[in-house]
Image 1 (cartoon, rainbow, N blue to C red):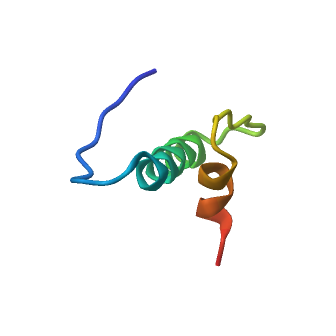
Image 2: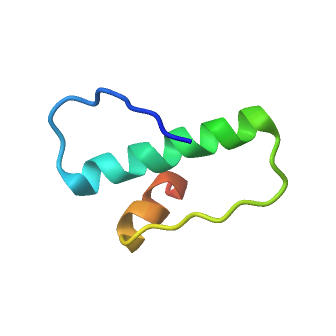
Length: 51
């Protein structure tokens, strides 16, 4: 599956969490029970879950 989204001007560190969040929204919409998030950036992986 592939998709694109216009984010504007952001760094890679800022854009990666947006991609993860978009993917999580797709997963929630399709009611998957188990997921695996793979990224080469730990910061990007934990950023969407910070309060």
